[in-house]
Length: 152
Image 1 (cartoon, rainbow, N blue to C red):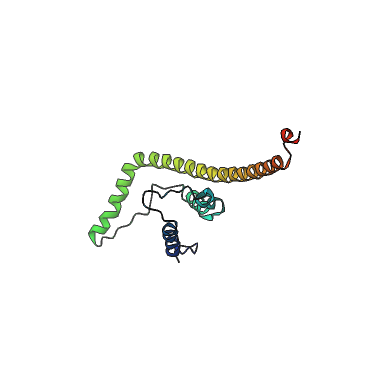
Image 2: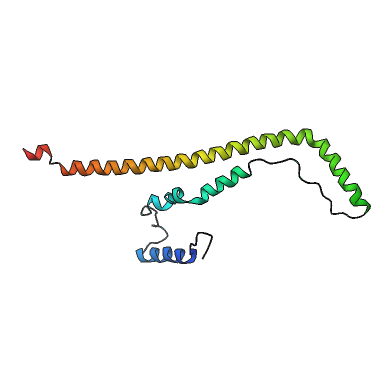
């Protein structure tokens, strides 16, 4: 098994390869016209992976310019390294802080936009599903009614 979803990728690939062989396709005539759109896009609505990624994106949208300062050096070098790092941090803070603030704003906007797109996609899929059912219903009503020209 591969991944958390429990998909057996090897058997899936083997099945596709066998299907290609069974249909007698060659390199020139392999098309994807027989692949249904739902096979490609239908799992997004039911997939928790995209929603999970949105939550992770929202969780990590804020970054910080300041991490804990540490040193791995021992002895006199270790005593000097940490204060030097602090001084360098203060010297570059005027440059780094505005960049981090801008990056946080971009991250927030991206996270919000991705979440909006996710919900818009689902809303549109629901609408398409409704319209397809309505279209099917209307088509069947149209085909069930006798044609006025042939009835005469």
